Image (cartoon, rainbow, N blue to C red; front, side, top):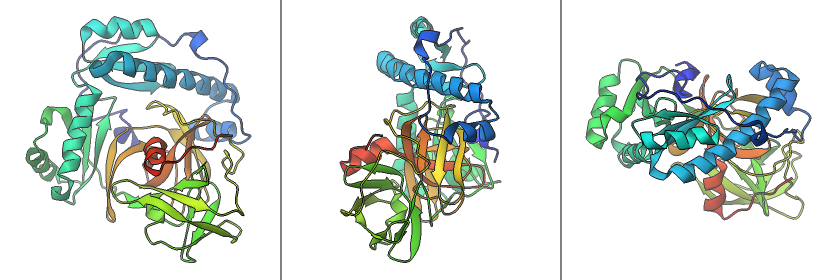
Length: 368
């Protein structure tokens, strides 16, 4: 499977009808953005093919687009049909189910397009598929909202489209809201190490810190599944896992002892200043102890991924390069924490969003 399918750049089903309305993010809405670390810009230049100035400009525009998406989500309510950031034009494209509200989006500076399904409707389709997940055939490997196509995309092994169709029928979803994509890639958990600094679990395995929180840090839930005491990158006793969940979700909170002080930093000195969710299409980077600092783009959100070890819902796809041993690692856009690396395959890396993890564990993000 090519990454553009899961990221919503090219899809099986055609997007809903509706002409684009011209618009752009005003210059005043995209103030100069200065990354607060030494390695982010070089990594973006290398992985995204940008010059230094282009990387800085893109971060500024994406920062403004994230705020604009939040505002329009609230203003449009049930008429909001999702938003996608187009790096080529530097614009946010917003789907609207009510033609009367196209002008409202245009006036905000974003592009506007008329779509058939609202985000609420597509999320409801995902909820129905999730509810019947145990009945889904093993040939179905993932499903989730694809904002760019205004559909829910369900991924199935080659030659197994009929199995996916049967599951859609059994789930009772509106089939017109779903696109089926064939892919030979199978998502797998990537244990061993992920995130910034490595930590060791019961002397058996290794993962990585995601983001610091009050009294500890967040990481991948599958890292905690086997239990055991924790040791830091230097093998000094670190603490133990507290709240964690896998499968279903993929998050864990580790509580550290007095030898360790949580900082609002990633191990390449990236400062973490918040947790605003970046738009689909925005650039993001990952810090992992196997593949280091790598960058790519935010892809489709609200993805359900069926690992052999269990199903995880609510994840986000990216084309950021990762490998086994990156589990739990930090995904960051600009200086905003996005989530903890979960797993993937050779073309897609999934992360579990930090917002639900903070809420579920009762944690507060430590800011740099």
